[in-house]
Image (cartoon, rainbow, N blue to C red):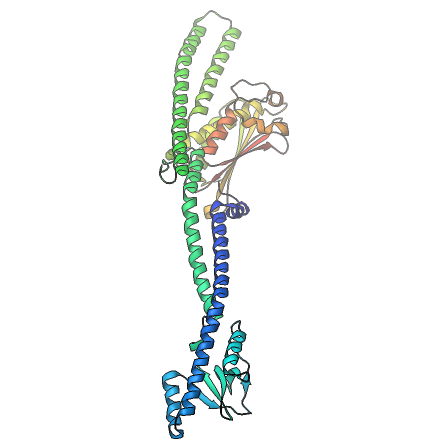
Amino acid sequence: MKLPFSLRIASLKSGLFWRTFFLLGALTTTSMTAWVGMISVVQHEPQVQQISAQVISVVTITHAALTHSAPELRRELLFELVSNEGIRVFPLEEDDKVEPPADNALMPDIEKLVKAKLGADTRFSSKVNGVAGFWVSFNIDDDQYWLMLERERIRGLTGIQWLGWASVVSVVSLLGAAFISSLINLPLRRLTQATRDFAQGKRPAPLPEKGPIEIMEANRSFNQMVDDLQQVESDRAVILAGISHDLRTPLARMQLEVEMANLSDDAREGMQSDIGQMDAIIGQFLDYAKPTEASSFINVNISELLSDTAHEASRLPDVRINTDIAPGAHAMGNATDIKRVINNLIENARRYGKTPGSDVTEIDIKCSVKGMHTSKRITIEVQDHGNGVPPEQIEQLLKPFTRLDTARGQANGAGLGLAIVERVMSRHNAELNVRNRDGGGLLIQIVMKAL
């Protein structure tokens, strides 16, 4: 039976797959965060030393080259620095528009080390006169200059790059967590599906007996349990069939002897009634023990089946059948078993639901189809106009060998009528509801998935 949406959401939240996935994801995220933090701390000092040494080296070499070169060659030297080294040198003017250096964790330590080597008056900037770069000032005699390095030469990974790499690692980690969760959850999902199929009367395929020891042993135990239960079911059917044959043969002889015996009419009718009841009880045992195989399910016209069953029941002298059956109701099932269920419900109503003050039992049979497409449902209702059942005892009706004679009047039988109905309907994955009818009587409702 399909779970309601709220229950499906709850099952997703509490499912083993999602628990494992979120735990692995949280572990991976925590580990990655700690790794990034550790790398940042460990890498900080070496990166500061490397960038500071590079800046000091470039400024020192440029200063020496300009100082010791001939004035007529300085223009060519500056061109070489720009074209080959990406280094530009500009005069520092008082009206230069200077922006502060980049605000990051490395810059304060870089400034400290560079100023210790080049002088406390060394200035830094991230943009001068609208031109972005890594700007450092230096002096030649009494003149001040700007030396601009390309940012790419002195910067490490930016925050965006760190975020990009972290995103890639996170996605890969989450995919790995999903894969690992699927591997962990797959055997349990197979076991759950096999258990559900077995509960619905299907014979599940044997679970693979391989993998980790715990999974292998669980699957082997489940397969053995299925085989054992199938054998028990088969043995029970054989035993009951044998009992039926062994009991019905002497019952037939007793019936014949009663017919031929010199008895009064009352005695003969009483004995014939007792023999008929014993034969009916044997039939109930066989119906209850008979398995309903899902492999035998076909497209059943529920509307026609109900109409035929109601027509047959209307021939009984003490029954009046009222029908309200929607046409075109189809469902997958075993037609013989569904008809047996409806007959059991009619017989249950005939025996126990006699209308007070009347010798005729009035039974209503209704069938409706509601919903659209995959959500279509067939609702079958069989109700009588009797005394009903005390509400606190309704649940007892579906238990085997239970008869509520105090509520429904005296009747003979093994108490398996509604138990057979519940057993067959559960194999058809249908919903069975029992409640008292408004106005008196018992209402039994069956809800099946429609085609």
